[in-house]
Length: 476
Ligand code: P53
Image (cartoon, rainbow, N blue to C red; front, side, top):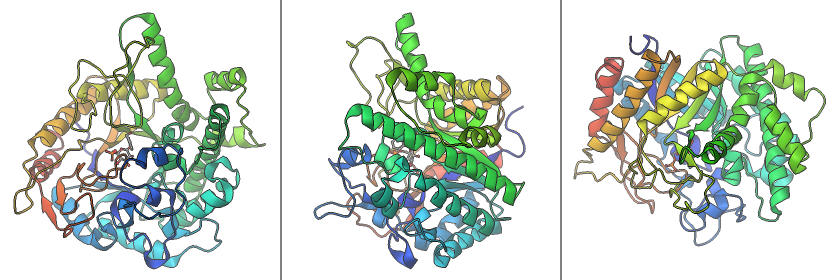
């Protein structure tokens, strides 16, 4: 009973929220560098406001982030001290191909990640590598309109082939696109799509055409990963969270079910190998013309993912009743507020049982191993003068969620490969751009305006997680 012996325990970060050094060693500019802090951030994330270069009067937190580029050795040593057996991180596409369309990769970028993986290897930490954590080279955004263009597939394929070859033997767990369903919501953040000049129908068409290109690129990535090294295991990655019906009125149930399908469309293609009929019907009924090329159907069919990964922060709520207007705040996935659940300081509702519910649901749907690759609590931690934070609220949040993973394994028979808690060291928030929305076991001295020494200090949760891992999830 309990967690399997080889369960992978760790934490997760993403290049643009962690590394900084945005212009060092030949790195090119990417869409996620251009998300400013402040009132305009959401409009840029959603692809409503165009921001294709740094502009006067804005602060761009990804430029320097927590300077992980120069601190990774110290950070990985701290992860190792907690006993991590895995570390989820992402490669910045623009470190390897600064513009995206070069034939030859940037050696300095390749060397950087090789050093990172070797550092992990030193401690027996298995890297879990996201190939695109929301990032797209700005050169390709400007030249081709990003993923709306079929051209992207070839460039992405070259990027994948390059890293699979170079890191063969160092990395075996891969995720292709982080939260692939983000493309429908935060379209510029998720996929470099600026949609501000399109009407709604055309914007929808562009999103689904771009999604198709990403799905084809995903299948190619799976194919190449398996060809280069049969040891490679490739997962899809979904922003998870089931829609609960607001009431047992069948109308609410139906709305919730249909909204879940909008998300599962992506993993249905990636895990089952073809478009679900409901999506083809939607295209037909709404006149959405998504162009497939010869060979796409076969490629998708033959190259399904090895496992299903997802982020889980909260469940969502669906209702058919327009009178129920109270929405949750602070998340790009809009949802009606659930009256049974408490909320974090950022309005994200806290629902540990929802994690068990989505684990059951995803396993029932796909019968493939699951990996919880993000989960955690963003909070405004107040450190003492030494940088220590007594983050009992975070410990409680995580303990409650890890218990539900154990229940899913023990009571529901769901195979779960591992758990990587989000933002294991404080990093820039993707949604808000703030530093003060902190998730880490490790406090980083940096504020929303970019001031601070970048000093790392252990929070109370650091010792707690160490003991969770040492006991393989028995002591929570
Ligand atoms: P933050 C919502 C909004 C933005 C990104 O989010 C999101 C979500 C949740 O689904 O996805 C992930 O930093 C994402 C991470 C991100 C994390 O959620 O807004 O993969 O990059 O940092 C947490 O609190």
